[in-house]
Length: 135
Image 1 (tube, helix red, strand yellow):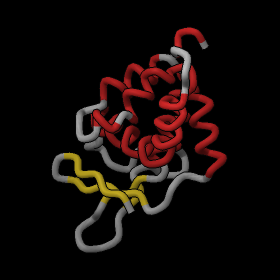
Image 2 (image 1 turned 45 degrees about the vertical axis):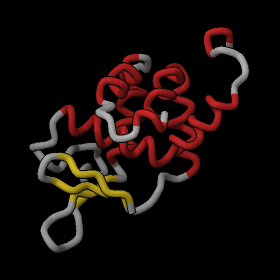
Image 3 (image 1 turned 30 degrees about the horizontal axis):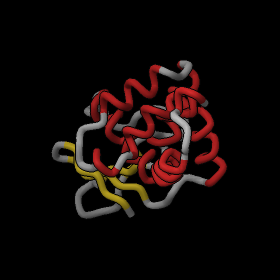
Image 4 (image 1 turned 90 degrees about the horizontal axis):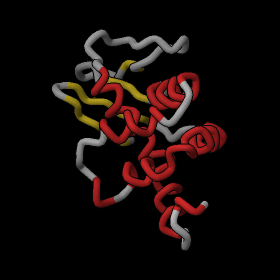
C-alpha cells in the first residue's frame, strides 16, 4: 500500500493497476514521453509535479486525458477516520469528495502513474541511445 498525504487528507492505493491497463496508459501517454520522463525522474522525487501532469495531459486528446485521470483515480482511496478508506471515484467516474480540487486531482494522478508505470518509463528512457527528437 502506497500512501499520499495532501493537505489534511491521507490517500492510498491497495493494489497496482492491471497490467493491460498499465499498457493502455503507457500507449496513451506516448505522445508526451519527454514530459513523462520528467515525471518519473528520481531527481524530481518529492517535488510538486502538477505542472508536469498538466503539460503531459495537454499532449493528449480530451478523451485520452480523461481515460488517464479516471483510471488513476479509480484506484485511490481516502482514509476515513480509523476505519477503512472510501473510494475517491465511483464506478461512473464521479468524484466522491467535493473538496478534491484540480491540484489534488493532478497530484493523485501523478502518484498513481509513478507507482504503476514510472519504472517502465524510467528504464525505457534511460536505455535509449538516440535523442527522443530523432525517434
